[in-house]
Image 1 (tube, one colour):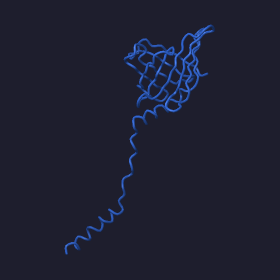
Image 2: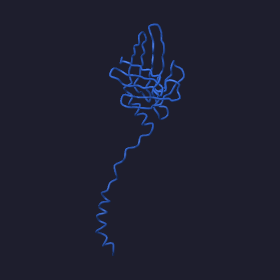
Image 3: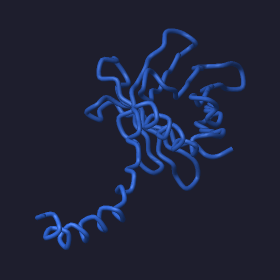
Image 4: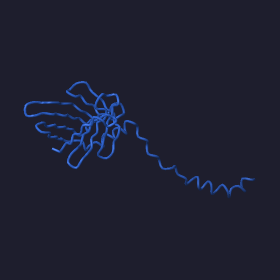
Length: 164
């Protein structure tokens, strides 16, 4: 039979086949929601109370640590006689994306989508919003710097908050 003549060639192949293993499993590709949750976890440096003193005006921005899928925040500007401005803030998931949601004066929500996230820097944008269109937070040696502006950088307002 011809099979016996092929046997010397088949034995090494059979031995290799018996020892061959499946390649290492590839890590699962994260879903959009998993990526967004990982991005939220990178924003832990925002948690805390930040204070800006500008003459008689004090502005405090307070961010709670991430709980669930939201960092809750408030901003309160006041002087010795009264509150001048306040807003409710949150950084949360909107669908499968991270978004900054502001309710100035407790009114209608403005939603800004995450545009940039790097170590100690986060930017949110809404090109359809009148002003601001971009909100940026940057970690500094003494606190955080918040900047609001148009997408082209015009009409910039910088708030240099110190750690409380």
